[in-house]
Image (tube, rainbow, N blue to C red; front, side, top):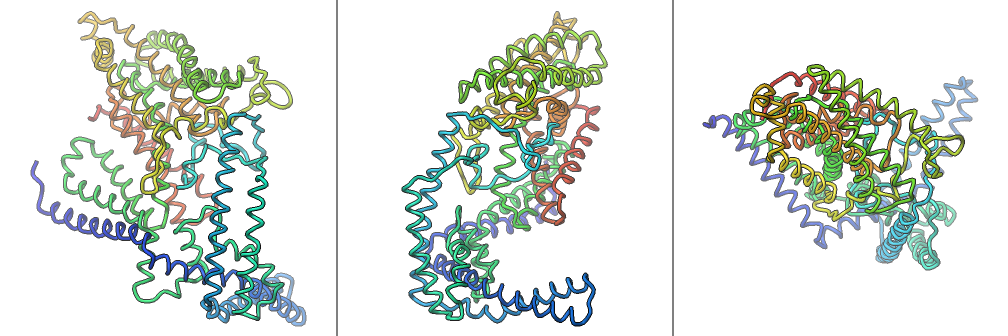
Length: 635
């Protein structure tokens, strides 16, 4: 297909930008290993340490201004509101003036001061490494013991029920991505050796405060004692890396020390990973421009537009300093979480029952098998395999019965299946209260019945996610989760090409022709329905172990809409679908949702916007996807 000259010119410009971003990112990453870069960072850190040490003096000036302003306001006969506003204004001005006066002294140092910072930094780094090791050992032991999970308190409620409401809205940070689903350190007590190691830091902190007092005699011992913890944290805080130290120094105004090319250079080093991801985004944009017609023909205009919008969100995330590696980690996590559930739609569409909106029938089978595993105090891989096997065995008979029902109402499957799914969820709202479960980890403290939410930590939480997990450019890849999704897609792909799979697809695409060819259409529809139900049972187990919570009662009700929307966004229709549509649709749906919320929050700083944007974006995508349900299949 011929490429227009204008496309080549625009694509070339984008590729030039991409190469510039790639070069800047690569240089930034390599510069982090250079001594000159760390020397500059040490200078900035020294400035932020001195800024922290002066904070009590700034507070003192603020209090003095507050007292004077209050006396003046009273003498002038100000009203209560006028007095309050005047006092706050004068205190803020005093603090600002104090910082302006004191700031030149933040850059003062001495050889002893620098050595004291480095010595304290070494001790703090050793302590935090030892603390992290003990915390991880504690979490591992706690997971083996599988302690009872307390009901979330109202002010710290577990994620809301209702499927899509129960998603990981906050991006997974680079550090947290490698940890268990939930780091519950309740009950953690440091060892005697760790306590002694922490106490050994005190002389080094005292030495640093002494050096500061020599440089600034105006800082009394009482002031420095009050600023001890802030000074220590300015040297090194838990989880510190190049970015956090740089950001803390810049927040203190340490960038004023930099001259010439240093401000731009240090910023480039700090944003190295983001620059690389922006380069990848520019590469994708350039290729999209260059091969626009071919991609539209292959993907369809709607998916192409959504893909470009996703790339735009990546660019905006870089511009607004959103951690792109963390966002990519979040998207990969969501892809694995929702992918198997979206895959459950595939056999239903291929067998001719349209979108399987009765998918909650299979989901409840998976939830019930998981609850049984928790009731028996099973943990680890044994619990995961048990839940999946039992969930499949439970899903087969209900899927078969469900298939018989759909065969009796041909032509109205989508409507009837929606009501069937809702009714089944409502039925199990009663069952969850009546089933004879006795494990105190699962039941209400008072009364009978199962609780709404169940913590997967210590049972099957994060098993697939953390299996063979690795980091690359700050992205934590949930290898086991993605491998399971890939294996599930491969099995479905192979089934499609088996004799039974080909017969099922033929029965779904052209029932009259299939019947004339000797294929039992009703049987194929039952196979597709049962298979869809079975995959849904496995999918909710994968989702729950990844999310870290299992939601009962009304939790499964909306899952069918999310899975249907994902596969439709990927290019499927109510009569034609492929494995490719599942993967592409889930990636685009979850990618736009995750990135869109973060970018919107960064662009509009309004409290509570996250939940509003989640509802708008997710429901908007679902609405768009459902409008595509009547169209032809798009490869």
